[in-house]
Figure (cartoon, rainbow, N blue to C red):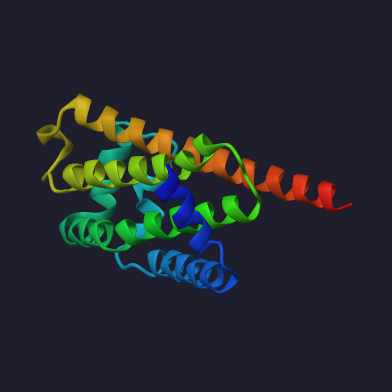
Length: 170
């Protein structure tokens, strides 16, 4: 736990937070510029999905689009969680969160994000939804939902932390 807080302290420096924020924003922009309407069809951005949504996404992307989806998942969408976890850890440190366990939340979000990326890539490599099990789709959807819930909790904690810091200053 001490290593996580040491890392959080290091990345809480203004210049590092600014750089990580800019890199996160650039990464988000690149997602939006991906060909084959990948951004509009990303399973990552839905709060859960089922076989029909997966089939729709696969049909929308086509074979080449699915290849680019998988490639972007193992490049951009691997970098993105690292960036937002780093940013949130730095912000948590800046907001003076004392409880050690709170520093595990962004790491858990990043881990669920990476797990979901692997799952959606495995889904996208299939020729059709007939080649995949319900368990695979449910697991990918579940990891996606947990990731999004954790990210929501992180945002709420940051907002509450800023309000707490404003109140304490005044």
